[in-house]
Image (tube, rainbow, N blue to C red; front, side):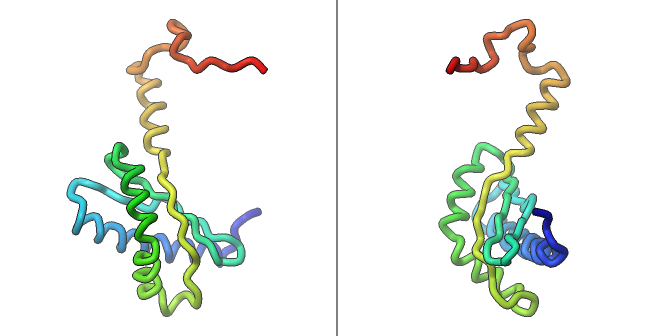
Length: 131
């Protein structure tokens, strides 16, 4: 189902304000970590917002996403204060790590020829299991 104009508008407001909250927290507590909100999608009843986080360096992604999930109540409260004049009810926030940058980097390496060639060495490909 396609998103409505209202869903996109609310997702944009949430994304902008979440970036401000998370980057402020990253500056205060985690030096050398960049957190960006790559996408926010809101359900049709506006009760749940899925937030996709792009985190650099990617080695710390799982740890940081878990930390953010554990602080969801505080983040939601801060977000509610920022959007109090725009939203009646704050949607529930679900955070996910976005690995699209890793995927792009892997494709880029393959195109440049930095990775091992699977045609020359088929052993690096995962084996399919027979049913």
